[in-house]
Length: 254
Length: 227
Image 1: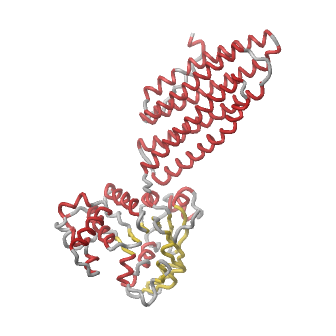
Image 2: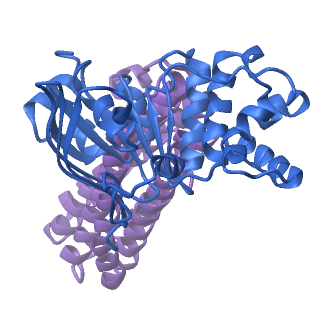
Image 3: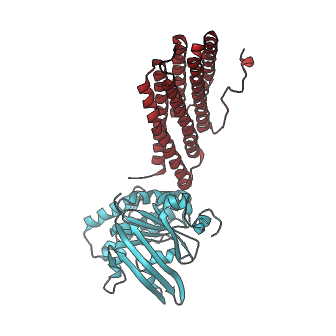
């Protein structure tokens, strides 16, 4: 079998909030065009780890990160890294849909305008492509000038995903993207992720183990700041190596 | 490629249907080999059985995966369960085809009784027919058809009884007939088992279609009840 291309690698990642060690040496690599799920109980460090991958933790005072995280072989914590550029390549979608209080159109092109793109045709095309890929185009195409806040939660979340897609990232990070949504909207987002993985590498933090099992190829189980087990999702859910993984997945704790 | 649940389910369904064709072909060929004393065809049946066995293992693995990763419910779950259960019935059919093929090789060249072999050929046609019909009922998810197919089981048992009686009679007439006569009785019992497995598949079709687990086998009816 051909060795999959590793697009994002991390080794011996430690993170301290002040003196408290929240990540205790995580080694984890991500293959191109795969969906990886990060699971584990609250406070296990999975979201903290996810936020390391596009340096979102930089915004929190008193955080120290050691170890190495590299995107396409380049250390993302190197001094010459432009975090704006990094976050374009590694986009993020949050738990609560967070559309800006503008029109749907302006939300989607926000990143492109920041990058200085003004050509109307380019922007129009980006809006359609991104909204189509986010599986929300048919719903919103006739009301692109309405406020994004007028949409339902599930639609807002898909517009937020379109906003990330518009800047053409390599990697999409999703931090519990469906935990504020109803089951139908959640399954629409899941189906959308499955269509996106041909073009993107996706890393999703989820509390919903069924969601992890349905959408991901690889699953990483975190506990107390450590990566306990990382494997093909079917191995994790059918035959995990570690007792702790088995107990968590079977609902014995967490 | 999109790897949605529907695609996986459809794939499971197709691979199970293929396995059904493999099993029914094995039975047909094994009976043909037996009545034509065709050792080469018998060997082919024996060798090809590993493909049926492998397919069963593949379907089991895939079913377990789908249950663990997709948590199917309602008709989706019934489909996975049906494939899981009915594929082991198909696998056992394949084993019986192998047993018939082995009999071909064992009794080759001994005294034969053409009349009984004609009956075995007829019973082989009936058995293959009931297997194919049970698979058709599965493909159509037609529980009425499944019940009708299961009713044919009685014909098979009558045919089998006729072969049994004729074999015993032939063996009583001459010791030269003992080897072939006992072989006929064995082959007859294998074909009866094949039809029992086809009946099981019909039961799973009813489950797939209605959600009810039913017993369609007539085995518990004694001969006295039939007369």
